[in-house]
Image (cartoon, rainbow over all chains, first blue to last red; front, side, top):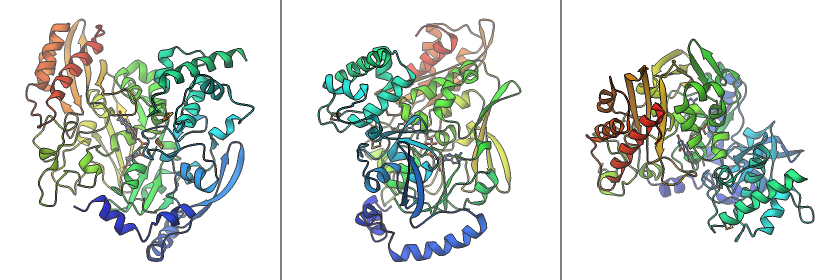
Length: 208
Length: 325
Ligand SMILES: Cc1cc2nc3c(=O)[nH]c(=O)nc-3n(C[C@@H](O)[C@@H](O)[C@H](O)COP(=O)(O)OP(=O)(O)OC[C@H]3O[C@@H](n4cnc5c(N)ncnc54)[C@H](O)[C@@H]3O)c2cc1C
Ligand code: FES
Ligand code: FES
């Protein structure tokens, strides 16, 4: 049984990290053979995208945005590497931490577990849509006030999760806040401050 | 992740025409919560990915006869908030709610939940479904196995990861598997299989098939109970699902299925027999829990799961009967 490391080695020529980050297309051999397969199949089925980059339009924070991605690029990587929207963080990249939390069609999702090409036609909202310095969203402001972060790496994901939670539960109990944020993890352990911040934000948003 | 060509069909026929005849040719993409991780780890490197979320006929929850039809792409969030599901099948709604990340519930689908691959760390680390070294020796038996099976005779020691498997089996549900050449309907209990070789799968799905729907008949009193290490973003350590057909206060028949204890959901027929013809109380539920795990064969590092499975069965029975746990 070959290990993951062996497989990484096998695929290295085709999938170099630099090529991936820079958005360059994959190395020659793989592309050439697969393209032939793709062409034949495309004729049969009508609609196939890739292997190479595909031009897509994503609706991000209310704005149609054009970009080109290979089918394998996640929405999170497209936002961060292609569009400089670096608010959503890449921590586990496996759907287990919540640092990449964004909203798609009004619901929170893990950006690391959605393909960018699968988000075409949907409304994407990132932390960047929640205002910035000088005009903080009530949730962000409450996070600052309650010292609800330490390293801050989990914070954008938590703020998005908290905002979505409060949109659905405007007047939550502390217990509900705890359950409602159970899709996000903070390694610095700032949960106490965060729960306080979400409760405060719920009050200030109701009174606004 | 190896690159792939991507298809986004809007009809089931188109989607079925895009699948391959062997694993590795094409993978179905639903919520992606498992598939993307599998591809990032090179456990799956399909040449083609077929998104099925835009196929209308695979969605929706509707009444059929006295039961329900649940489309494969219904999300966990849709399922757990559906009034009919909550009323008829609380065990399912409970199982969905316990997948305790709102993001996962928003993304993950019922079909994907049944088809997700095992979480066994040897499998995820590239040592195959049976978790063996080059010589064929079981890494599970000789290595870390605290989250592995406590039932079964091998050679697969991973545990079935699906939260819905036990609940759907207890409810007597069936899944429809469709290919370009036709469809077959099988009980969920036959959908999960214990593979004998690395080339097999842990589910009855074939590479050219899509799981299109789940059909659940009318049910008795049903409930699910999970024991978890932590509440957030994790799988249960053990679970139990119970369905009781009652005649007044007396149990006419019972189905008890344990989860996360074997390569498939695990039927506890001794517990079922113990409940039949009786009135449920705490003492009986406790005895049924004991009977359920009487034949457990834990590995070197997971005998603690026997106690957890016993408690899960007891509490699922009490929950189904409406007795405070
Ligand atoms: C941190 C974390 C915690 C989790 N906790 C739990 C838990 O407690 N309980 C639990 O049950 N699950 C849990 N999950 C697993 C979660 O992935 C599933 O619950 C989810 O429902 C899978 O659905 P999906 O639509 O995202 O599947 P996908 O990732 O899209 O697909 C999973 C697999 O199924 C195949 N597939 C999907 N749909 C179909 C179909 N209709 N026909 C044929 N093949 C199909 C895909 O090809 C793929 O191999 C967890 C996942 C994560 C990341
Ligand atoms: S980076 Fe997406 S959940 Fe951790
Ligand atoms: S503040 Fe450091 S991870 Fe949360």
